[in-house]
Image (tube, rainbow, N blue to C red; front, side, top):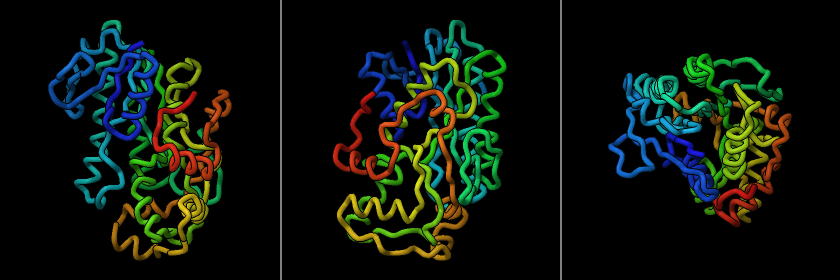
Length: 305
């Protein structure tokens, strides 16, 4: 099997590439520079025709994970345009090349996000729920729509609606470890907003499950079955580190510091993995306490299947 991965240097892509490679799967990394080895494919994700279809010959599946980081910097008009282009245009470029490729990939697993559902409050949602409101919900809608040509051409498309991916060396958890270890752990706002999360081990395991499961297509939530409130997460992380976590970051202060992007830290997303559960996927980390314990003990080791 040969799998092409975009965003292979990112948190999820790097872990996935390592895990696939350890099982003897041939990984081709999509890179934005000239390819320097046989396991690299050069492309320009923002250019029309930015990927030569011939480069995908012999590739069985594509996992598209590239995109500008959502939570870095204020959401200025220019930043929003960058976030959209890095996802929507790149997906269109990739889909066009896949459609045109001779003996090319018949599976596309495309990054997406639970931001599609907007603020769900205390309401539990799964893949049957409709689109929410806000910038991220609209971004995800258009991002997923960019895969439609591939689906129409007969390619199996899965939209990976990931929650917050927990990893000890990167992402949200990686950034929280230092302040929590210094005793500066704090809940955000009221702390009542729900966090839908997934461990990096289960994220990789779920993607591999979806690569192999021909019956699954369309949006699939990659979240653990045990979402927690921000206050619960704060207590769990403080306990795992043996440190206090009693501080509070007031919502107005967060909005003043971060602008519109602060809304994503205050929004409540209580999202369940309906499709994965129905398909028989078994989570290694269904609850956050166990996930944090393993992550902080073992780091980000390759997931056991």
